[in-house]
Length: 249
Image (cartoon, rainbow, N blue to C red; front, side, top):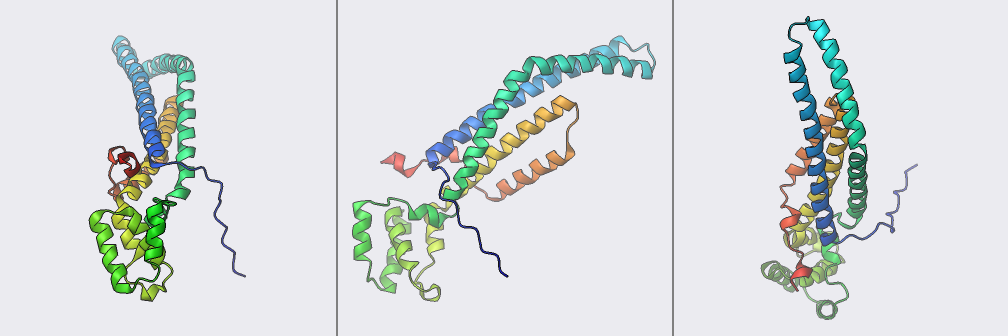
């Protein structure tokens, strides 16, 4: 018996591109602060290690390792206690940002989805819908080329809506190609931003855990590297550098 596909949830909170840009900027800021704090504390531990190694150089290796281990353990415990509140506050904030942008994925699943809601409800879009209702294939294809050339998202949204009602084999152009040409860059930038916020949160957690235990996790390092590779494969522009068309009007 075939399993029924779960219906998409309709309760995911809306986040605009501007909102996601702000979340990415904030995540980067928090991630950098956390990395600097961890690096500073690790640097203090390493400096203490070198100092003790030099001071205890006349002892045997076993004795030196025991004394250094105890001293560094005490220093690390002190640093953990003194930094706990600030570390946990940043990790909580990063986790909240991670969950926030993860929910936004529902609204940015494809360029077609993004284009479909562009200028929805506008008077011009309503007029265009009426004018193109009975247009033929040649006219629709010509207007699609015009929409790309003029970067006219409003016209493109109407054309995509109109052509999606045509049987797939009879469509004069690909609605997915048209949407990608108009909003594909923005869609990839949004996708990459969501992935980056998740990476930043995961990296901060990994760094914090490594400091807490004194041991880095190879598994987490590999996982972070794979996520960074997948994000790089998008070849996306930085969302911070992309201007929301709504902001230009």
